[in-house]
Amino acid sequence: MSRRIIIFDTTLRDGEQSPGASLTVPEKLLIARQLANLGVDVIEAGFPIASEGDFEAVKQIAQSIDGPTICGLARANENDIDCCWEAVKYAAKPRIHTFIATSKIHLEKKLRKTQAEVIELAFKAVRYAKQHCPDVEFSPEDCARTSLDYMCEIVQAALEAGATTINIPDTVGYAQPEEFAGRIRYLIEKVPAIRQAVISVHCHNDLGNAVANSLAAIQAGATQVEGCINGIGERAGNAAIEEIIMNLVTRKDFYGVETGINTREIYRTSRLVSSLTGLSVQRNKAIVGQNAFSHEAGIHQHGVLSSRNTYEIMTPEEVGWEGENLVIGKHSGKHAVAALLEKEGFKLDSEQLNKITNKVKELADKQKIVSADDILAIARDITMQLPEEEQHIRLEEFTVTTGSGLTPTASVRLNVEGEKKIGAAIGDGPIDAISNAIWSIIGPSLQLVEYNLKAITGGTNALADVSIKLADEKGNLFAARAVNEDVIKASAVGIVKGINKALSFKQKIHPHDV
Image (tube, rainbow, N blue to C red; front, side, top):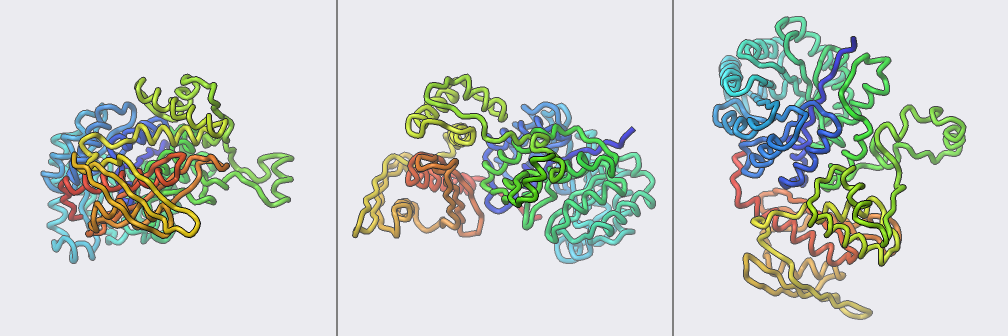
C-alpha cells in the first residue's frame, strides 16, 4: 500500500505574509472553501493573536469549512495558545501549531536564551496546547540552521509533551536538497519515537530550492508537506504546493506515494489566490503559468499535433485548465452566471447574484460577449467589498478634464467618516490627476507605491482591472483591486479600497514580535 502524503496549505497564514498580500475575512473564506474543494488535508488559516482580523478569519473558517483540519499558529507561550484555541475550537478537526526558534543565531540574537531554556519552553508549550487540543504540531523554527543533535533533543521533548506532528522548517531557504533529506533521515534514526508521529517539512524558496527540498524530504520519510498556492510567501516565497502535488502525481512511478488532492481544482485555486492577493503568476511558471501548456516552437507544435504526450507530460485538463470556452451574452440568464460562479467556489445570495448578472448584462451590451474571466472579475469586485464598518471613506463623485493642450485636472468628492470633502488636483495624465485629487484630501500618511492596469480580456471595450499597493509610514503594504469599464473609475475605486484597508489596519492591534 502506498504511503499517503498529508498536504498542509499555509496560503492564508504564511502566504498572506507576502508584502502587499493582505486579505479581508470574506476573501480568506472564499480561498478556504476553494482549498477544501482542492482536497488539502490541513488549512493553516492564520495567526490568531496577530490581529483581531486574523482571529476572526480563523474563527469563521473553523466554523464554516468542512473537510480539512483547521490549524492556527501560536508562539510557544500560553497567551498565544489560548487565543489560537479560541479561534480553531469550532472546527470539526482543530489543530494548534506552536513554534520556537532553535538555530544558534536565533537563540543568541533574538531569544537570548540557552538551548536548555528553549527546550523547556517548547515542552511546556506543547503540553499546554495538548490540554486544549488533541492535535498539536510543533516546529523548531530555522531548523535547517540548527545543529542535528540539538534538533533531535527538542523534537524528543516535544514528542514527550504530546506533539502529534513534528514540522522541520527551512525558515530562511538555506538548505540544499540532499542535505535536507539527510536531516530528515538523521531525525528518524536518532529519535525512534517520531515514527509514531507525522513528520512534516516547511521550506522557503530563498535559493530557489523549496520544492526540491520538500520532495527530497518526502523521499527521506516525511509524511506531511507544507506550502502555498503559487509559491507565495515572505521574501522569495514558500514551496509551491501545486508543483509538489503534480510531481507526486506525474511521477508516481518514482515517489510511490498518494495524496487526497483533486488536481482538477489546481488551476482554479491558483487563479483565485492570484486575483485576491494581487500577486500575478509569472507566465512561464510550472503547472499554472499561462505558458505552461503553450507550444510556440514549430517542432514542438508538430509533435503535439501528432501526439500530445510527445511534449506534454501532463494534460491541461489534469490541473483543471479548460480554456476560455464559456461566453455570456446579453440574452444569457442568471442561471448561466450562477453555474459558472458556483463552479468557481462562490457562495452567493440572491441579491449578490442579481447585482452580478445585471453588471454582466451591462457589459454585454457594450462588448457583445463576456468571457469567464470578465464574470469572475465582476463577481469578486461585488462580493469582496469591505464590511460596512471598514468603509471609512466612500467615493461619491469625480470629474476629470483633459484634452489636447490641456493639463489633466480632476476633482473628487469623498465621504470621510460621514463628512463630505472635496479635493482637486492636476496630474501628468487623467489617472495621475484623480489620484492626486484623492491624496489632497487624505494627506501624506499613505503613499501609492505600485499601480498596475490590465484588460481582463482583449478588445477596446475590455474591463479595466486595476491593482494597487499603498504603503504607510511604517512600511506596511496594503493591496486592493477594482474592475470597471472606465479605467479612471477603476483606478479611483481601487485607491479608495486600499485606503480603507490601511485605515482598518490602524484601528487594530498587531503585537508582532516574531
